[in-house]
Image (cartoon, rainbow, N blue to C red; front, side):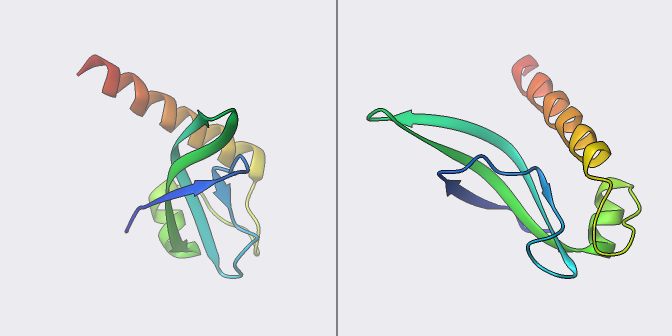
Length: 89
């Protein structure tokens, strides 16, 4: 899986299974940056197939969508755990 550095003016969804049919965008390390009184978001993003996402997250995707609430919560918990581990190093 290849992670890319992305910037956006809109706060990203951590998991997006609707923008690209048959694919899932996964985002992590989201940071809000303010520069010259303007805010934007920097984050890492990977695009994967639904099968790759199932393997990555351990979650079953039904149809073309996901159980959004549960997926967002799981992704947020994983991001929090990663931040805690980074702070301890």
